[in-house]
Image 1 (cartoon, one colour):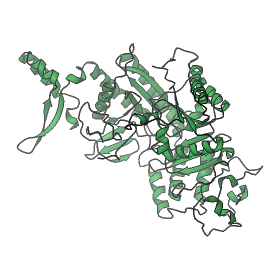
Image 2 (cartoon, helix red, strand yellow; image 1 turned 135 degrees about the vertical axis):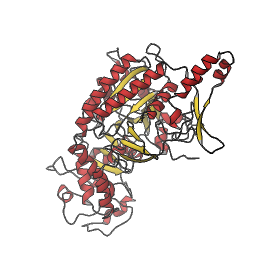
Image 3 (cartoon, rainbow, N blue to C red; image 1 turned 90 degrees about the horizontal axis):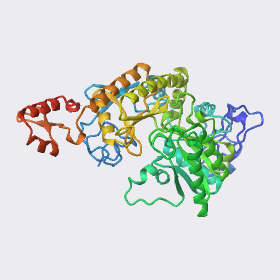
Image 4 (cartoon, rainbow, N blue to C red; image 1 turned 180 degrees about the horizontal axis):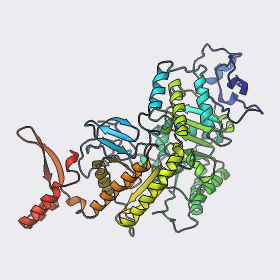
Length: 555
């Protein structure tokens, strides 16, 4: 059945939308009226309709995981690492978070931490408006799959209004992974091709096909073999890459690397369906590109018949500060945009937005929970909060203040090799020194845990696990940024005077005969050997240093 603009606006006899390709825009349809192909069901439902004849045409602890390294692990290889043994340097007491509000998290002992990494809580942990809206809607209606839903139409309308032309068709999903999976299906259906170009160390989700297009995951899967239809191009890394900050043509040169990848695929008889990437390359370590990079890349990919997919899971809904969406920083418009966790502030939501031309090639799409009334109510609440609390402009202001402070620290501390980002998404690359630029993942991990002891939480990301990741809730303030910079300065200063990591004493909790817990010092093998030849005075000095060890009271 067809659905017109007038019907979308509220005609009483609206029927079930059965096919995306049947959606039509009237010539006089206002731009603000989105095309919302979400009221779909695999079953025929008793909804008012002038015609239902076309219905037939539609037919260990592996869960505590995160793509980033976070200061919550107890050293278990299955803890907080998706099964990967990321933290083997020192054992740490687990950080068990029991509640959170705004940009603050609290552990089981009531200790407050400043959250500088959990961007999933986009407008702030447990925002009262989001909580109230979700509770209210759950008390009214939780699911209405296949039926007309006014709140669905309202949410899709407001979400699409944030997008530039010609992005006008919205599909609602339950996660960023689902969104990227659907985006690939849209691209392959439209181009009638299967090959995809991705960027080094990229990550786009945990579904089967998304693992294939996520180079970050390949080394983490035993005996994994890269698929022939996946082509990996260079990451536009201007700090350590082939073309650096002092190269004025770095953007063009990195774009030419994309074209080389496409030409190499075509030489094997393979045609490209899509190029997918993050606008700021957050997962690989936060790499804002030269202004010309994406303009050249978009021209190249489209010249070869492919579509552009912008993965906004990490940067969407105003995080970059200048615009609502990360791709808008480069004055470009992708063919398909995917969105995930920012939409729901912790509630599982995702979305795909594309043009009507692309959507018409898809055919049927069904989702039991995508676009359910509770999700739409929460999604509307998040958009309202972003607007009413002026969180986009706040991200810009706070981000500029923070970046200035971080750049000052970069001049002061040799290990802070690079500061990258915009708004409230920043990456701090930790290296051995600014001359050699060798990634120092051990020092990055130690810094992360030192910040944890100061009740400041950051994550670690990047190809070499040496980039401190800063993606806080959007309610993060200038005062919060001052605290973060101050604590980071103290930690970096302390680390600059410490002995090498493999010679550091470790604090460990043991239980004595009385049943009381007390700290002891566990020495490394090198340190034990050194003690054999040292004087008693030097021993006392070293033990004294161990007693004020920054990790001693974490237990």
